[in-house]
Amino acid sequence: MADTTGTAKLTFGDKSIDLPMRSPTLGPDVVDIGKLYAQADIFTYDPGFTSTAACESAITFIDGDKGELLHRGYPIDQLAQQSHFLEVCYLLLFGELPNKAEMLDFEHRVTNHTMVHEQMHNFFRGFRRDSHPMATMVGVVGAMSAFYHDSLDINDPWQREVAAIRMIAKLPTIAAMAYKYSVGQPFVYPKNSLNYASNFLHMCFAVPCEEYKVDPILAKAMDRIMMLHADHEQNASTSTVRLAGSSGANPFACIAAGIACLWGPAHGGANQACLEMLREIGTVDRIPEFIARAKDKDDPFRLMGFGHRVYKNFDPRATVMKESADEVLELMGIHNNPTLQVAKELERIALEDEYFISKKLYPNVDFYSGIILDAMGFPTSMFTPIFALSRTVGWISQWKEMIGDPTQKIGRPRQLYIGEPYRDYVPVDKR
Image 1: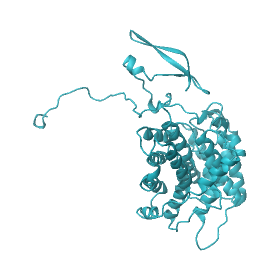
Image 2: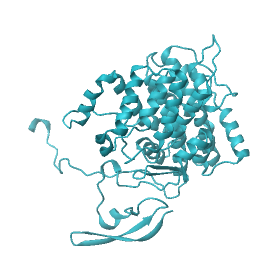
Image 3: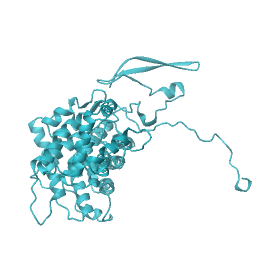
Image 4: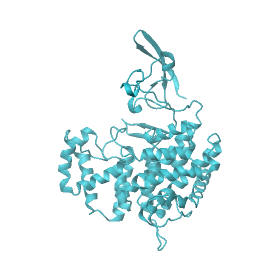
């Protein structure tokens, strides 16, 4: 629990109240208003909760001004360069990096739970053949509670851990099945001989009639995409998972709620929107036209994949993602692709043009991840499902932390009511 370090005096009308100040390990001090309504009969107004801490958390810290992202204290650039996704999963779930024995045990547990219940195949067939993979994932993940009854008791720490392992293990399988179903291909079962990222790529791109070998460069790039999206503090979908979990809902329902929130284009659809923008621009010679539109305050056009709501100077994930993008494009030999040429020129302009620099419109993680996924052969409809399977470990870690917090209570935001005041009902014949 954060330390109480003093008080802040709030004066309104002829009243005054002292509120406790609390200091986190990192970040600004906060004013604790938890008892404000009970003591002063007022509450605060904060649309989007942008100035409100709704919980304590020891998982992820972001300093937007410094461009810093820490998982359990470890900077994301060090993890991306030296670690791998499943090790980061362990770190987020349990709080510390694993030793060798712990890592092997965790990898074994995840790898041996990647298959889904066979009857879930029938569940997929209830969707239209052209269903968006995210629609399928919301339904299937929510339905996991109908198949795995032995890990629904949120008051049992062991069942919570089993549910966590199951979701980390099975979300790539479910995402790959959603993709296969959307393109009319047979489901491909997971292979225990492959690592996490390679297994996902194999399930997406293998077909029964021929051998498919995963290129290690593509597997490394996919592992980084997963790692760089694993958790991002109290964003919209994570807050949704916590809010759903605060009611006591089972973990599968909570993660399904997070997936539904992530589907929104303002959240998880950013890399898809970025690639669609690049395709709209079409060719390098049209870039000046769109740059001019971006600079025009009266034009609704916005450059997607540049700048970030949280990071004010640079996205610490983007540097590593750019490295992977360069490696993947070199491997695939598709530098002459018009969309990628547009992306490269936009990247150059953003890093050199004074307008972009002054507005801090740097290429962010969504800019590069969309390019990588497109080069790998994924349709844009799969971009957000890949984000969802990557973020699952963050969601479940946040949910697990919340359930174990003795101070947590059901979420119940207040409102600033602006409707009609009290009035009496008028019978219909007198209106």
